[in-house]
Amino acid sequence: MSRSVRIHLGPAILIALSVLLLFSVIRTADGASGPTSGPAAQGHRLAQAWCQPCHAVEPHTEGLFDEAPSFQAIADRHGTTALSLKVFWRTSHQNMPNLVISPEQADALSAYILSLRGN
Image (cartoon, rainbow, N blue to C red; front, top):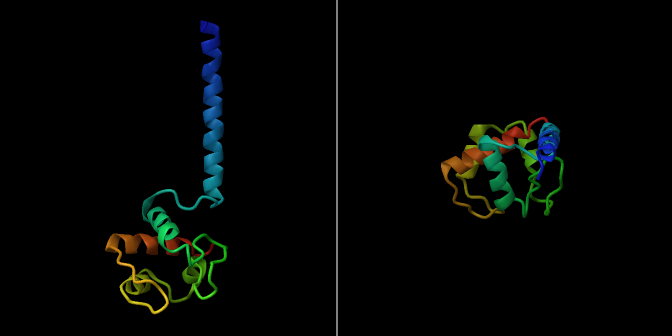
């Protein structure tokens, strides 16, 4: 490859990477991809894996079963707090499978649910 071709490819690659980065920032800003890091992102991944068969995990979507509230509805309840969710994760529920989750997983799921407030 000649030197002049290599010189022109450098700026083209930089422009392409800049455009990809811009699209990534725009997509994250409008909430389309959910949280990208931290406990809320880990909770989002756990919710998709464990809870999505019954609950609507993504904001403003419907769940598979009418009996299971969406995570958005749970987040928007007046009494939903980090403490109330922590108690919920430790309590057996008649209509839910009894998941055994670590305190860190419970905190991550709670962080994700609380991140949905006001969406």
